[in-house]
Amino acid sequence: MTISRKAAAAIALLCAVALLVGINVIAEKTLAGERIDLTEQKLYTLSEGSKSTIAKIDEPLTFRFYYSKRLGDEIPTYGLYANRVRELLQEYVALANGKIRLEELNPEPYSAVEDRALAFGLQGVPIDQGGELVYFGLAATNSTDDQQVIPFFQPERERFLEYDLTKIVHNLANPKKPVVAL
Image (cartoon, rainbow, N blue to C red):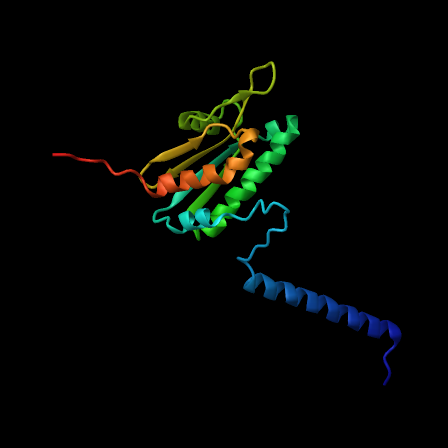
């Protein structure tokens, strides 16, 4: 019995697809936590000090990333910077093994999310003549209600972004104990 060329090609194609799917499933199971930073300046590779600080987290932390999508739509440089901040926050979450939870929030005008952002002390910036405020900040808390805030991410501080985030993690993971003197 001979197989036609079309049948042989179809069988070969099915085997190739099955092999590709199998490789992807195996890679997903074995390499799920692995990351490779191929950027020239290693933008997404945290320093050893940051990794050490993250490893010392004892209690869960919550990062609330407030970002008005309208800001990125109106001023694209802020949109790019917001992506950088979001990806770096996701790197912190990935390294924290469940000790950091990230919430991404889009505060709409006159909403409960906007009220919460204002309660944390985030700075709203007017985007148009109508006075509508946009937000681009971070409110981080620990389980004992200590909080650290970046009121508005300034693009000129981008080179200090990892430092600022690591400082927040350190301050929340190591809250100052009250000193009692006799």
